[in-house]
Length: 253
Image (cartoon, rainbow, N blue to C red; front, side, top):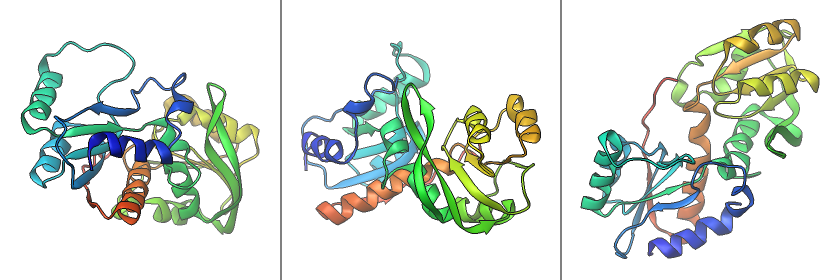
């Protein structure tokens, strides 16, 4: 396939246009190639030099990521950014990024995957972000201790950086917003959730969680966002038969 064909395919899956006014990531094809055909797609959480080198070394023609190269402001082509761009130009590796549309997607997204891992039912949208809800809340099919919930969402068995066991011993309800969404814990308290799962913690929400009797798991920004790219990867292979590979590059954060 060409990059333009893959762009149309990914746009048919993910609501890229619907988030254009609120997402400062340049969702979609961020770096094109010279028109050459792509027979393998690499998937990773972050567009960094490590994942680019591994993608090109594996024979991939396109790197699909959750965190891309551009975040709403122009960049001078120098330092680390210059090295990344030079590598992409030299190898012809294309880069495709999908941020909030991948968090929100009801089947392929990070938050839908976390909800599935936790066994959530009666699922509803949760987590207001510029007028759209990008996470999910629901009832836990089986009540979970915070330790059991951590085990369910831990990618490769990696520990959650932060657990605040301030709610009931066993949680019956849960809300999830992956990545850097610590302050959505306040919405979880307002909506009566027992457990809130996100990626990163914040000092500022500690006492809110304590006083609001909320269990909070900050499972890691990286580890809570491996799920969406992996689901898109599986969908691409199923639909097109292209070769694909997930490149695990954990930060521990």
